[in-house]
Image (tube, rainbow, N blue to C red; front, side, top):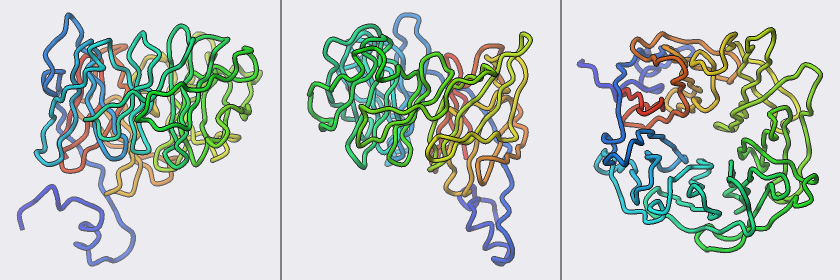
Amino acid sequence: MSYDRNFNNTLAIWTAFGGRGGIVLPIPTLNWTKKTYSSFGYTQYNSEKQINVYDNGNAQIAVYHAKTPYMSYYNKTTGQWTVVDVPWWGYGEPEILYSGEGVFIAKITGFANIIASFDGITWHNGGYCENAQNAMTTGAYDMARGSGVVSWWYYKSPLYYSFDSLTERTAWTLVGSDGSSVPFLKYLTTHKGNFVGIVGGDKSIAVASSATPGSWTTTIPEDLNETSYMFIRSVNDKLFVMKYRYVNGIYDVKLCVMNDSATEITETNLSHVGDLANNNIANPQNIIWMADWGKFAIFKESMLYVSVDGLTWEGVEQPGFTTSTYDTFGGAIYIPGDGFYVKASGYLYYAQY
């Protein structure tokens, strides 16, 4: 029988061996190529080259970080990336604040509006943050409760929330204007009915129920070991975070899993000692859930690792999947029937699968 890549899924492999014993899935060695903004239908704007990819669980988009009124989405019918008109982005560079739960939450750089989409094609002005200053830094949304939050880089107006429709331009509610009752949040994610975030300064972690997004509790306080955190993400009901310490001039970095209440952290077997801007770091931004495999996957320099529980990972080398120093990977998606996309600087790595 000739080989068909569509045959390479968990059930087919298990069936081929008579359905006996445990399911054994080899980690593939993939053929990696580079794609630029033009691969997704964009024309270069000034000198900008950065392209990012996002998956909200239902739709995938490729975002060109430039002031151009278009958005590229993956058309599942044609199997092609397709550019559509999105006049919002003509006002400034788009930046995706949150991707998940079937929704994209975005901002226009320099503006106080929250822009939202469910399919990557139609984008709505989902609200605005009155009297906000400086830059909107991060956001999260709980579709089950229709609750969203965005945080701003300004200590006296750190957080806005809303229970209103993402399709209507309504004022989001400011909390924490006293500068102390609500933390400024550097990274945010949605996890099992909670918003979980890394507090500005990267030294602590705080949680709020998405039912009461104006009330936050510190679950992991600062410690005497000067521990820092980055890139918190919920992937397939597992809460991941990157933990690091700066010791004797070098960084000791570990990928970790948190419990559902974000009160405990467990280190995985993926760690790195060296520069913080290094692709040998297991960055939670590069974790995806492979439903066909029933495993998590993460991309690192020249490697693809997989894990059943998020704690113990095993990997296979990926020849050609490497970048220059400081050209770090910063986001990965998988599109069934197409392949893997991993963001580098100015281009994406792509591998058909």
